[in-house]
Length: 187
Length: 146
Image 1 (tube, chains in turn yellow, green):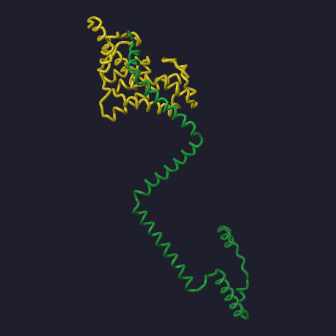
Image 2 (cartoon, chains in turn red, brown; image 1 turned 45 degrees about the vertical axis):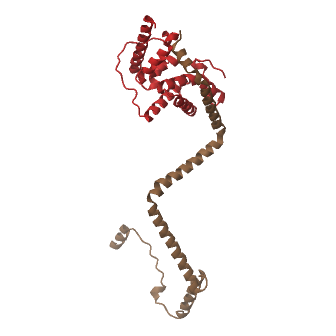
Image 3 (cartoon, chains in turn brown, blue; image 1 turned 90 degrees about the vertical axis):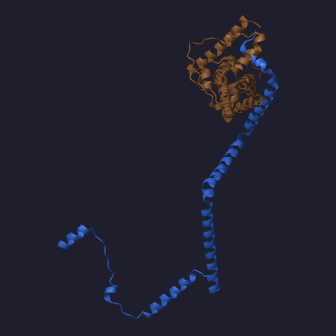
């Protein structure tokens, strides 16, 4: 079962997976394995741990698919599991995370593709992404990787909608500033 | 120019072989669980019974194991004493005690008593058969006044 890289929710073989069809599970995992890995890796910055967490996420998803109410929300549900796994990973390492940065803001309607990165900016973009505080990075990654809506990001990260908006605004503002500066003064 | 999504996925595409391996192993595990089928249900119920026994052992027996050991010793002593006494009774009579023995001796005693008092005249009151039916107290009282 082949699936496009960005499959529409109705194309996902969730009912077949629920019926226990291995091909359906394979298709679902194939669709999400790389985006999920990117999300987890960019949060925890450790390859082996990221791979382990992706595997744990897949296993948990295969066990608890019954708890998914809307098949169309499979992607958000899967990222929600991965997010929880990351939180558990951090708790084990007793790292402080997701501190609140009060950032009050206006409506945010940008699409993730509005931001375009030149070839020479790629490395710096990745560096800057990693310098963002974890909560902002998490929201920004979910927005970039899967283009989740603010409501979905709010559900995945179990954060209030207003907080998600402000975090996303803050993160995108930082990136834009960086890109604008670079465009004005190309090295 | 790349979108952030394309850039991020491209940066990590090297991990795809490892992710493929993870995916395949997880799908294999899903297949195993599926083939487990009915046996899985039996296994789960057995596991539940084992869990229950373990809980019983850990919660009820282990914390008070000295008390249980004391009880067990007392019960063993009682059993041993009881068994020993039964052996002694058998040894005294020399043969097992039958339940018909006392009955027969009682019957013989009764026969002997009958023979002894056969010619004796009983007082007339003793012969009279009394029919006494209890009545409610109110009726008994009214009968007394009349």
